[in-house]
Image (tube, rainbow, N blue to C red; front, side, top):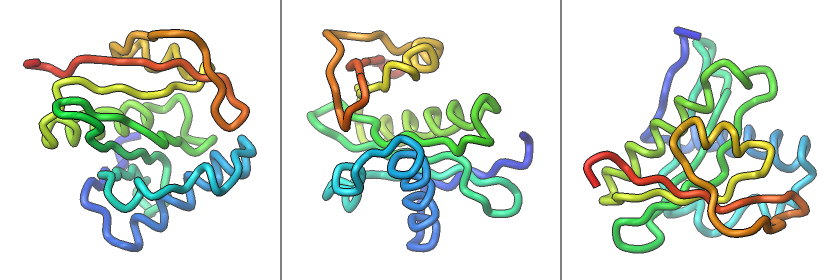
Length: 148
């Protein structure tokens, strides 16, 4: 998919497309309650969006600092038709770059168990026991960023 476009400085329209993709993946597909999918962290987090050449949202996610030098990646979503095509990796690469710009040396995330192999391939390591979030089993994962 060479015609992908990565947006890291989202205007209101791009952010709306990111939220619509999250809604489709989390609320519609995975049946996560809307009040759990959207939260106050959306206002302060850095969001990224991957689109196709026609402006269709294919992947998104957000990152925020949760402690000095520690960032948390959240709400990573890839459209069903775009899964397995490298979109998720593009989203994660962009989120990790944003985390580094924020001063993070390490990134943490809560991975849905079905996505653990994806994150392991990116260098993340699972920690702790399984926990449930929005009725979906998760594991905490962590990865150091280069140079730190």
